[in-house]
Length: 135
Image (cartoon, rainbow, N blue to C red; front, side, top):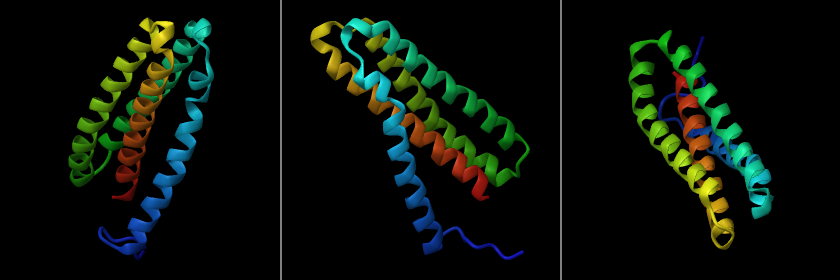
């Protein structure tokens, strides 16, 4: 079977760009509950943020299992993606901790910080998943 997308083909880059744009639009909506929360509802916002991060953690574990069954090239690329993914995961956890401790006067900025960190984490996961499937 002929490959539709070679490693450097313009069609592959266009497809990846489209997937990335669609993913970013979706990720912005994922944090909507956190972004719209008032400081008085901080516990609920933190719980929602925790659910989002836990869902990504589960997806990362599934991806690790899938990649373990792959060839050496996929595994090597995955190792590189995992470094970025773990850094983004750590940043999201740090922002979630800040959200939990946030005072009313820093609430909006803290919510924005978590939302950005989560979107970055989701984008890193999407990249890792796409790379694992494209090999």
